[in-house]
Image (cartoon, rainbow, N blue to C red):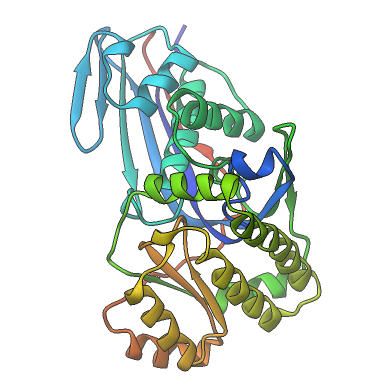
Length: 336
């Protein structure tokens, strides 16, 4: 009988509009958090292929060839293989549409979700979005001890434009934003994503943010406001109030800058102020902050002036992606 040999998964990166930080355990274990996020049409592709021998080959910035899972240095691959336990030699490679580290698009969690999807499929298992998201959270947060939240894993697994709630009992509710298709289309047309050229590790910022959330009442109050703003963004879309969406995005960024020192810096603040002077209504730095992508809300007729005033930033086109992680190729050939 022929067995699955090669699997390719495609998993979307994401942009988060408001509420980031309320998905950290330091916040949601005391009171519910919420974010508004969307998957976008930039992806990480994971290839899982049966290897001719019993070794494991994992190729990323370096290539590892080992005899057993516990010898792997790449902790996400090691823990994913430990979770899924394929019963044959295996080769894992990846391709990303966007630089995969420090850009604020959730690449680490996107990678983990896509890897799990490919590995499960390679062993003949079809698993749903909830299981992929929970598995990725277990790997990154519990097994690897990363100081991150849960939103990236869930939006990568589910896709779409989602209002995601994080509950003290560890449950996560993923609710699609129900709005008119033309509202969603206009929102896409009014978002300008600019690459700053600066990358950073989110871990340091998120560690500080978690400590501040636990110990600083003012920081916690800022997260409460950001959680409320995520709901207000959803309501603005339902009401077709797109400029209101942009104004709330601005309010959220003003609050987020207060959560930790590294979230913004003088260069980012200057870029944002210039963009506002040229017609941007709102915006934010994606992810934990400190670099990566600057997202702006503005009317398209203002885009040329904004880009002319910010020549050092590179515009990157994107659209919303309705689907989460999916298997896009299966080759049945050979036996495990």
